[in-house]
Amino acid sequence: MNVFDIIGPIMVGPSSSHTAGAVRIGKIARAVSGGQPAMVTIELYGSFAQTYKGHGTDKAIIAGLLGMAPDDERIKDSLELARDLGMAFKFKKSGNKAVHPNTALIAAVDSQGKKTIVQGSSVGGGRIMVNRINEINVKFNGEYYTLLVPHHDTPGMIAAVTNLLADQGINIAEMNMYRSQRGGEAMMVIETDQAINEELVSLIEAVNSVKKAVLIKPIY
Amino acid sequence: MISYDSVQELADKATKKGKPISALVLADQALQMERSQQDLIEEMNKSLQVMAEAASKGINSGSKSASGLSGGDALKMKQAIHAGQSLGGMVLSETLAKALAIAEVNACMGRIVAAPTAGSCGIIPAVLLTLKEAYDLTEEQVVMSLFTAAGLGMVIAKKASISGAEGGCQAECGSAAAMAAAAAVELMGGTPQMCAHACAIAIKSVLGLVCDPVAGLVEVPCVKRNASGAANALIAAEMALAGIESVIPVDEVIAAMKDIGDAMPKTLKETAEGGLADTPTAKKMAREIFR
Image 1 (cartoon, chains in turn yellow, blue):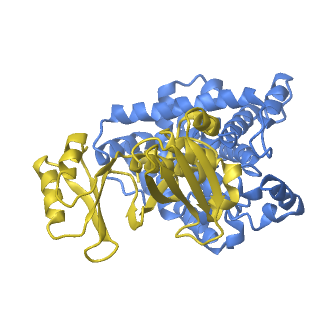
Image 2: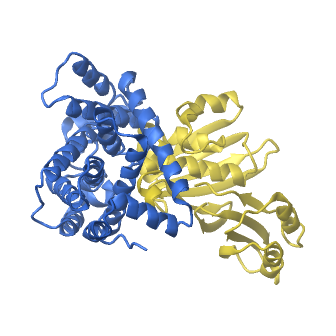
Image 3: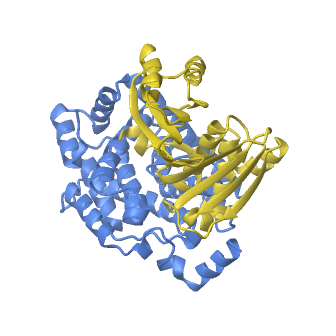
């Protein structure tokens, strides 16, 4: 904790968890789906579902999907902006219990028809936790440069990818491996202290058994 | 390095060094964050600018929030000031107007600085910006006083809470008032010990205050509680500057706030299930908003 956690962040109101955090969940979904989606369906859980209209949680998530930051004054007009920019959206209230009371599940479809699912929770003070990418349960908060590396579960994958990071002097702050089943779909989530550039992302994508690498820049 | 475990320790260290609390916090934070003091001052100054913009925007707006629950009160306060109507003097009236203005900007999805939270964002700026105007203080002085506010806020966040969901409104508007009171004391030339007393006095006045927002929205009673929180800060600072001391030491007051927050039922901690949120009028409003 530092002084700017107490006097800060600069944000658009009314609620750090229901507005600022919601923008950030949208922003992560945009990054994972590789830019502005053509169509999104957003399922809201818990307190998000109950109070989203009054807190502007819907506008906040859409703003994030359009690439805005939590202090962007256009957030309150984001629904109209999305229509202007050709991003269709739909909100659904879920009656189901979620991992956390302030949770949104965003299903984004791009212009090619490719679908991406991102689920995140707003855990307080505008901070978030991403807990699902497509079919895989994950856990990261967007504070670092974050690399998502979906791949086929085979031996040597971690070494191959982390060696590429080491070659460029990039230090790993946190790293986790998730897989659906042995020999099945898997995902590495790597959070780094240093910036990662697109060139490195291409190098990682060239590794055998890696399907695609997604870079998420810090959202705080 | 400062551990931010005790307001008294902060005040004692500052007293010993013959410096204001802000100077200690700034030096420590620069060290801990591995950034220059100038860099931190500039970042804090950005927040001050956003606070000032929100105050001036909100005071003239008069527009209603999306829910229709709040908006327009800052404008009424401003009109009363222009009509020369003030019971408590212009500093108080101006402070109330700014606190309402910033809290209304927040409710209308405008840009604010969480200080320490979005729900309590009007209190610290209302007090400090009003004192700046009334006593011709410099921007640099006000920026420095924000480091004092933040330093005390870190102790409160660590030892108790600054979140309504965790500790009730006492933890949110109460903490903001305590931070504002201490910053105001420093700004007006008070000693670090006086800052600590102001912090304690402000919290003591709102111990037990619950967080019971209508429809779960940061509007009723939050907008007006920003005004009362700012007034609370002025009252506490006024007393501390007069040499009045808190009988219970500041760190024990903060610990009491934590105990009270822990004992507070869940229905009164931002869940909108009790208190004002559970009144017939509030329930009717909630039904209409979320229909």
